[in-house]
Length: 464
Image (tube, rainbow, N blue to C red):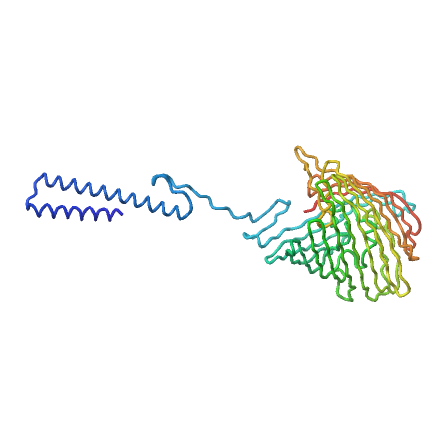
């Protein structure tokens, strides 16, 4: 622009000079002075036109960007902060969840550490009166998602001086008629009742009930296969076809078809009613016998305190049915679960019966973490976590459970009464003290006959 202004001034000066010399070959001082004044006026006019052109150009640019034009060209231009990209690491759950910039990929580690101190006393068998410490579980794993609606979850568990695989599956997730549909392949926990379908670290009790251990397929709580689940706002339904849990692959797998559904009617801010049912049918491979089930009674740390289910020669299969009835009201909850399993053998069928009634109450005001959507337990949301002004959440729990295998001449029966306190300093930590009075009558094994006693267990746990 400066060059253009200089050229324009020179052209104007040459034009005026030409005009002046055309009138007089020898200009006078007055003529030269007048000529200089005209050139200065022309230069000032060119500068004014140039400034106006710059203002108009800036106004057009800002108008195209959708922001108001500045009042004057001399005003400082505002600094516009660029929108920051989503954080690639989320610590809100206590462990880092890694995310790609577009959020399509995620990766989150999973950690669970559980340690128990248990004391059993009052048994007629001295071998059962044990004080034990146990690393109940050290579980390490990861979960996340990938583009296209896929998720994954894998966990390994170190317990009882052995390493095993727990959940290890990949799932496809999508909306179906406004509901959440999940189809998974791999090994995952059975969807079998409220307690049976809940991970061990979030159940209100230190061990699952005798009912859960009894009314289930021979392969146990895990199986490899296909599972599907459709979840609404207050209900869900699931169906799975699975073989045995992860094994060495030296024998044929049994095959289990299992389904469950639940409904949470009358849901309000104060609570809801829970209704549910589930069942399974399994086809067992030809084995010499079904291994005698050894059910945990009160504490897994005392292997001498078990309930024997008996043996079954030439088994063909089994089928089971379970029912659920309970609910949540404000800070309290109540749940009853029961069912029957029928073991089919070449000789005849054998009945196995079990049920449990449990209840709890948060004296610190938290809501019981029973999900109206999935029908399983979660972690409580602590209102005042342990800290400067908080003390955590405190829950009182109780349960009665019983199992009866006596239809088989080698099967036993037993029951327990349990009372406990759960303290949750934070959402991810838990300290529990549970006491139970138990009664066991085994017909096989090392400790045969009717026996009773007490077990006290303290657990410290952290899970993410």
